[in-house]
Length: 436
Image 1 (cartoon, rainbow, N blue to C red):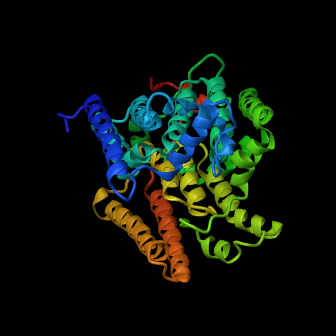
Image 2: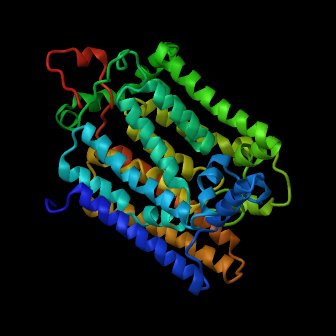
């Protein structure tokens, strides 16, 4: 694909997104089914309230940081699609960040381009931003944190990490692997860490063998976890999170804390929910869940997260991808926009996968899409036809969980283990191999 360059791909992607935004305005005006996501209407109403000096939480169902409403205040005096352009710009920024990270690890040009296309030409991703969903901003912030770590800017990474956790609480699951990867043997004061590039990870089988005993390495890291870099990252990111949360608590009081943070820890949703907990939530929608029930629902997530972190922490990008897929699959509430969380990390691990698109890769795509379509068919009968198919919808959720679990296993089995950062012992040995 020598004729297609990254800049050309980015330009075509930008034009395509502008066309979709313009088309969305036309569809909203002329058709019964709106193109614009209902969440965007909530964002816009909250932004309008903030522009008038009022609390964004006067808009019911606005359950995000005031930062999001602030970003969309120009909706009121420039154009109502301002936010869609912001989200789509973040979408394109994610594509640029993916290209940058892969180039830093010296992935071949064609492979970089194919990986970026997985994001930029993915129907899930280009419709999310153009329909008015804010997830591309979160994805861009997470990739920027990875770039900061790659460049050795630990303080900057910590600032952005505290901000993104405030903005969207789910990236808190990345705290432990990031702390573990800040090994003093990899991160030296005033120096960029050395990266394990793509070619060396393909040629050197010792990385794969090292992965078998990686648990020992993680336990060693846990014993010596209180290093300067780790303490600094924890303190800076924690301070930024507390500062943002404290500021908005001062401005909007308990309304902000309940809606923007606490709500997401106890959220239950009996509609549009792919989760296996859907049917239980539906049956108990009018009753408060007990502490034991809430703990049991979090327990599988916690166990899976810890297992993945202890096994793959040093292969940071792969670890974050697996964590996100598992977090979404085992969550109490799953909506289609959550899939974007791991789609932004998928291109970063594809160059290290031994899975071929034909047969294995294609079967994974077909299985995942098939399980999702199967759920949507039952969801359509429930939502639009009023059929009593709650039990069938729950069974479809079980099938979808099985499909996600199968994908996790397939990715793990076909992944070529490759730590992102070199240990000092390797970095100073005879043949030093920096990824600039």
